[in-house]
Amino acid sequence: MTGFKPALKPPALPKGATVGIVAPASPLPDQEYLERGLAFWRRRGYRVRLGSHINAATGYLAAGDDQRLADLHRMFCDPEVQAVVCLRGGYGSLRLLADLDYELIAAHPKILVGYSDITALHLAINKKTGLVTFHGPMIYPELGSQSPSPYTVKSLFCTLEATVPPDPISPASNLPPAVTINPGRAQGIVIGGNLSLVVATLGTPSEIDTRGKILFLEEVNEAPYRLDRMLTQLHLAGKLAEAAGIVFGFAGEATALGVITARLQLTGRPCFYGLPAGHINPQVTLPLGIHAWLDAEACTLTYLEAATAPA
Image (cartoon, rainbow, N blue to C red; front, side, top):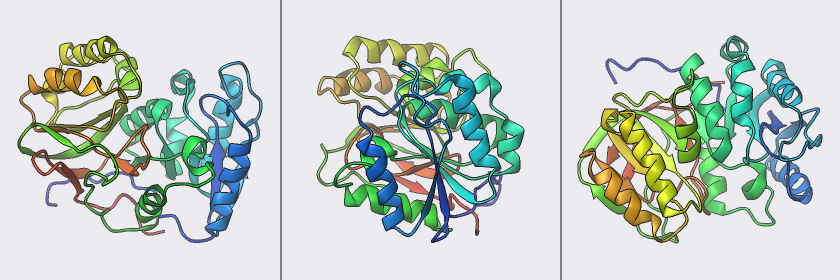
């Protein structure tokens, strides 16, 4: 790994650690998910700490912007909290970026787990601090479900607890088969997340930088024309051509693959569709901000370094 620029890696999650639960975006549709989610972490031997405003729902937001921001800052400040896990996605994380204390986060590097709307936090924090974050399951709907997927659970803990590179990520056996869009191989830092949120950062200080990176994208239940529009916007912004390689998770609708293939084939970049990450069950935990090797013919993503540092 000669020449790799070191990332800011959070300490690995030790057994018995305290996990903080925050709600940067929308409130839960059903409070039973929270109780089951807390029980999930406790059964694994972890302690849990809730954000002070986790139940202060304000319409489509889990709480006011100041309250959600305060909970996030408090978890990063709290010396007893070793990991910050998001309650759910929805909407709201983008509203926090202008006032997020990046210096505080850089001074207290910790595991941050979430996906969907949480993509806004991943992109901003990684760009401003270099902190490795984790695109992975949340309380809703995965960890607070009545029976979390064993694949999802194994991937989560193998990634967060280890100080060695994660196992190569291959297509999951019980999901639709992966598809090579453009053959080839590429190496680079993995960055990205939910397509809608990646596009939403364009023109902002948190705009995604794909130069020489492996761009990961995923989406859920968007109409084909909306997928086309967002991918076209990324193309016009130069973000697809600048990437070393592209990997797409899933996008929900069966018609989505045709749109994605048509747009991404034009890039000529190594690319495949079907990584088991995003709005999908089972779901892999995907570190963002470290180097990996993409093989678009084998449809695999192999990390070249650990995502966490020794605790």
